[in-house]
Image (tube, each protein chain N blue to C red):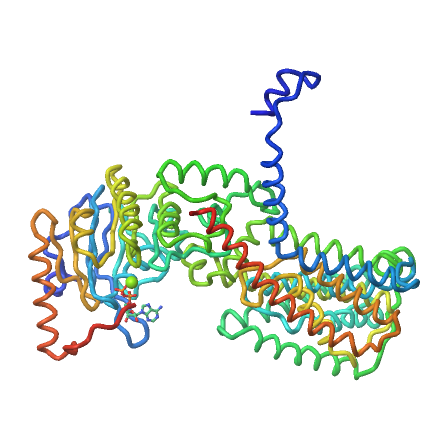
Length: 278
Length: 350
Ligand SMILES: Nc1ncnc2c1ncn2[C@@H]1O[C@H](COP(=O)(O)OP(=O)(O)O)[C@@H](O)[C@H]1O
Ligand SMILES: [Mg+2]
């Protein structure tokens, strides 16, 4: 139970008492694959935490545990100091945690407004639970306009949208209702410079409003723009956790390169290996 | 803007300047194209053309008596086809629906004619058993993570086996009398009316309810829907329950009309016609896209074809050939229409 037992894996600072989210000693395995070992993480109110790590390091798994999609094998999660046990993503949403998944979790065949309400559609009331379409359309339109997301029409099916527009719709869905912690899993992956800029602006606007967030990304330049603090996840273990103000792009790059060299030397990575995208 | 001006000025005042005629033509053209891109429209046009063709080329087609025959033939296909459209939309298929259609009237017979259970109660118990059968299909598929093609193929034969064992392979007569009998199936139009009730209910369920949205999401992006909080397993299970109950119900109505129960029929033909109706109506086998109106119109097309070819004295074997070509044609048309619709939205985006 004690933190010192896992001194190597524990973050540099211990979690401050006012953390909006705390992840303590969380482990997760999928069959023989150990995705996370004894992960500790915290997010302070209004803080933007950047999470970096190689493909397969366990970032998405951590994300899916925090948002209730997976259940951890061990460890605990605290929201505003109170321990929570999420049995579903609906459960986590009720506690103010919402997610923009790496795969976006949008339904191509449904219109934009239906995707914005996916899993929490509004109904006209009554036992038939008929959809309150016009109300959902109106709110969706207003909300997208308010956060300056441009789409042809909220009635357009998501399959007709560009990658950036889809990402924006996914972000809009996660932020439409008040959230305490927003999780963004690689929101800038596979996007052109112009579309990235759009999403970065969207995230910056949210940060300016005091939204607590965890942003997963591979691009350090983006992360230094967006984040207050950076953590590195390596093979299921948090190995680095520092305020952006206390580190630099140079230091972080050096760190990652030396880590890579260490892995090559210990034979854990093949020299020419450049693959392994997840 | 135009509307408020008219109301304020009163209907007798000079009308506001109309839009330039060209704009009207452009928007009418766009409207037409939008209608043409609807998945149901192709099959709807086919239905009208076939109807006109057989009405003009034969004298026996467009008659009251023939319409009764026609609707009685297509009613089960319409009801089960609409239910299959929902199951297909979740990305699954139910091969056992036709067998449920044949078997559950036997349950009514066993309870009512053999055990003396009141008719309404016998029907209700039969429908509850059908729901249980659908539940088994749903649980096998979702909990064992097996394709429904396999699970419902298994339950098809199992249910057929139960029917053959319990009936000893002997035909029975199920004849309801009185008003109840007329409502159930005795009246010429009762079967199509009941089928219509099923189709309308399923239409609202898929296209206008919260559950229907979850059905589309489950079939369109299974993992994504689950991540967004849609209970995908429960959605699939309910769909299997629904199709079993609908098949059993329309089976009881059909049996009440024909009055003969034949355990020699395993119901696979009814099942294949129902799936064919859903597919030629524009429902995708790959999930995420289904249309109840399309399935209903698809069943009308099958009915008109079968009936019309029969009246024209053309060998009934041609029906299968035409049906096969119709299914292939519908698949190709669906893919093309979809591409056109996506292109149009993309052109708006730019
Ligand atoms: N649902 C799952 N079933 C089995 N293995 C999984 C599952 N999800 C993730 N993994 C495995 O867990 C490890 C971490 O994956 P992931 O969290 O997606 O990494 P990242 O997001 O950092 O690229 C990988 O080895 C991956 O193959
Ligand atoms: Mg990932």
